[in-house]
Length: 498
Image (cartoon, rainbow, N blue to C red; front, side):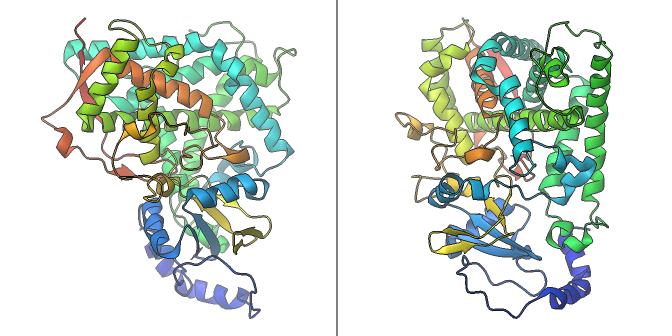
């Protein structure tokens, strides 16, 4: 039973709620325009199964600042770079609290999560830990050899596939590479290889979380139903969270006992710092929050990089002339047979342009994580009301024809000579968000994505399997908290002749 059917079944109760809580007071504020809401359900039927696309279409009629009523929840949609800048830069603090969906109450994750905690001292402390232990420039510079090693393992796997004439599934290969990078950073060990059942199941678990959290949920639109969880979304999320929590708690318990899993090195790692094992390098974080922090970092870190790599490769295979142009740049700058190094990326403007163009068309989180207003805020001539949910449609901003010429076309050349980047300063392109709540993993994701993508196309040509041609590639997406390619991208690697 889908969520719209459930809403229809609950209409009589919604009718009672409407009369219990409606008020006759006239609202003197000028609220953003939007489609007229239906009784009881509001604009829920406007969402469709790909809300970012449905909302982008509605914004063409009602404008870049639009208001809908989703059940009992007033929801403001931002669909232009101008409005996003006004909200996330000029009024950043007012837009810094998260709107927590019911699924995330599983395991009380919302109370311990760096992604979902409200803007507070506790959140700032967790964010500081993320930056100091993983994402600071000094940490990332110091861990270059680790990333190089993981990409080398990826290329070794691709080379074996090439020798056997087997296709590479890009999403699984990228996921395993990123998973091993994070597990080596925190636990000093690899957690899997591209063919291991553990890596596949771990990815299924993470995708399960992303899909459940991204689903339209009756309990979010009618809070009176939170206790009964009518769609079972929180229960399924709790199941997925439980698998990750059990794994991380087991590793934490071992570490506190002075033990390490078989194959793990004895080097000081990020988990030691979080648990205070070395007091000189320890961070101030309650041990009860460590598993939740690991869930955030592993879920977001692996999933966004995986989907971004797959979309970028899909666009290149769909546009062979762009792929050839990128390979020519790599061969000229790096030289055939040589390995791509991180310091080379600044000398590869076309590779950088490809990544930006892929982010523009396929932002990893098409509707940026929702915000909740603690007070009324004026945006231009409209009031974004207190308690409203706010969604920034990064997908719509990236395809805004008022900003981008040939907005639906994959044209990396548009970024050559351009100073636009994805770091939250240029609001025409904000795939990772902006302001205080910008994704903390952006610096690592950018390095890994360039390194993996560049290495894969520098070392190999690629042939679509089963007679598939660029013209008939399926580019449909599957919506969740993150948006992945519906049909897995697979291609056979062919080594470049030296």
